[in-house]
Length: 175
Image (cartoon, rainbow, N blue to C red; front, side, top):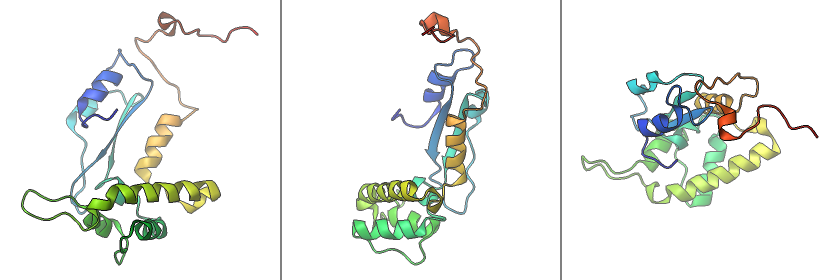
């Protein structure tokens, strides 16, 4: 939705008994140091787990994709004109693209090119997925996100939702 991550999107789309969507996921960056374990805010507990999930990319999206995809990161960095750190891991990628801190710590050397890098990485991931899906490692938190959103076997309960009130037929029309 392009909203600052907080409760508003969940409240809008997944309020119990007034859901506007069958499933809602809020994907956030923890923005915590790599060594810390992020936690979910307390407000996430008031939404039904069959409708709402709050998933954290730790520390941010790009570093959360590194493990198992180091060679793709190295190629994307080279295409961006950046030198790959040694080793290519969560900590070094986090440092490379870190933003400046209010305490005076400067931004990482790759920060000005983070968007360009992300586009190169996305292109490489897409190419590798189409060529051989097993060649790309999908982290657990993203696997959880996609399994939740796209699980065709899941029963979806919609308390308070009446498809007919929206003019949607509940049975297929006869041919």
